[in-house]
Image 1 (cartoon, rainbow, N blue to C red):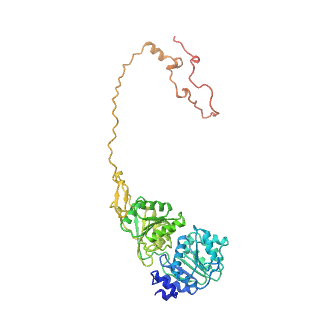
Image 2 (image 1 turned 180 degrees about the vertical axis):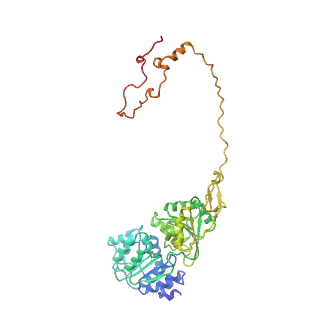
Image 3 (image 1 turned 180 degrees about the horizontal axis):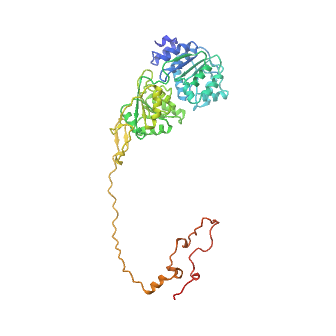
Length: 493
């Protein structure tokens, strides 16, 4: 089957041919004719199957006739993330170049004033994230009463991000007589309930088992200790990687790992939720045009990004949710191409690994990787190393590992020589009669300079307070040694 067999216009077929495609994918072959016939559709397809073109292509032909009005879009496409919305907009630009359709993109992180101006001119296609759309709708800048075609893309992702209440609100404000297309990788109960409520006699299309991994992707798990993850990743990248996306669970890990990669000589970039939208788009553009060939990402980029030629996907952190595993590795092996996906597994990831393998219905093969030191990387506890073996390594793009030379052994520090001190003991003096008599006198009778002093009787020392006494402040009374005139002496008999 070719695209010409699907009922598309000649202009659209030409645009598809210009993009290098001749044969439709399974989801495209089944969905496009039904969309052109005006039917509602539920499309269950894993990522990387070409489902974006499955609704973009027929929409262009459906909207080819008609005229847009100010603030009243003729069609609406809802996407869970800014990146997916921008990608759909790129598809409309690419495939609709022989059609005169107007389009507006409503996403956060972009000037709202420019978006309002675009709406006032009238748009045929409105691509939006639910949050920004609801914001502009509540401000009175959008009227949805003229929208005859609704697309809910990545519905299960919408559920994960908490957008289902917004989608329900949006659906209630659209015309009751409309065409609705819902696409999702899985069909959990809340999505089933949504489709039952807002779709009319939909055609159910499923091209792959829900949440199954793409057969064209070579998968592998690498058991590694947490502290050896970075060295293991560097070794695998040095072994020969064309383009790669590296997924981390935390934004801080994304930043730290990208910094380490750049310091190691790799051409890498990063994308995560804390970045401004323009910066995220700029990083994606660098990755697409080859300025950088390694992209470190959080799960904000896990779903729906269609980037050609990604040869490898690395799960630097095992995903917390098994569904995310399928979407992450789906960034490679797209449109019939082959790819490789490797997941680092630590001892703490045993439960996550079990859930992933249960979801995809197969055991991920385990592979062994040699680190730069020539040792195989595994999860067994490593013996304690001597300090000189822990020399940090600097890696270059060519794969060479250069270890810093260990510090020179320092000579033992020599203490300065000192003359030996000679202590000569004086012969003990025999006690005289007077000495014996003085030692036998009572303590109070001894001269002041001969009496021993306790620590609490030194001048200036604080008087100890008993536990039952109250501390009312400093004692201004005398607390020094007993004056001589108060001493009671006992004369010698």
